[in-house]
Image (cartoon, rainbow, N blue to C red; front, side, top):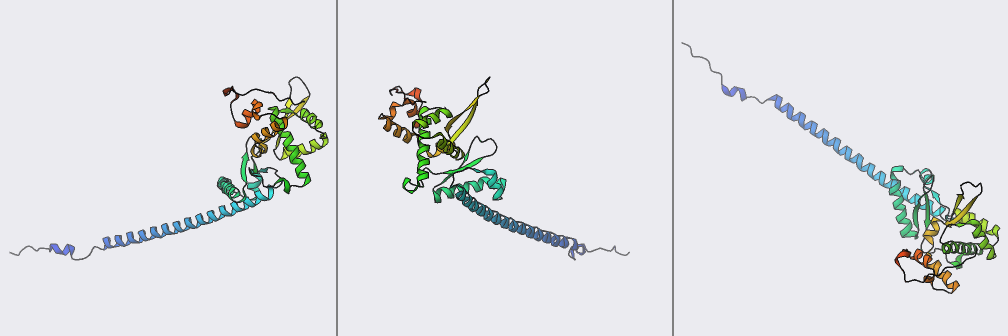
Length: 269
């Protein structure tokens, strides 16, 4: 009786599995491709970051140059003009603006700031708390303008309110300053934001009048304490004699102090 044939159990493992080997090669190739893509992506990202950094530094330098060239006449600069002329991307403006602020302050001693409460667009001005030009370096016209500006700001401050423009003109006439000269200088001071001119309309009346007050640049460049001290010296009084002005100059609440003697300053309108 013939014996049944036996198949060797080792025959199933005698040859390598080609399907498993092919799968491992495929996975390796896929991994290499993904690594290459990742490296290319990182390289492109790095180059993009370098380009972005260089571009921001260049735009910051251009902004600093633009501000310096346009700050001599003290006329405010429009933010919209800066972004257009210097082609500054809107999303990067804040970073570039802050960089320019730092350079202007640390290198040139200038403060670059935005002016609030403008109707159409934001305005930028530069100013310095430290005088960049001494009186000895000014020409006669500049000296005359600064003296007139100091007188106007002092008058407005001591009045402690928005003053009708006609009252200011009358006061200038008492000092021997012609209305024509005042009007010419006033226009410049308004453009430079030393003065603010508001139109006041009265309900039921056709006539309107204008008032003058301190502008934003005056608030930044002039120290009210120094103005008060100068006026008090002329009046031969103590600065504390002018209680409202003293509190305004020092940022106090007049209701919190009862130790000062109230003396009113009379300036003929």
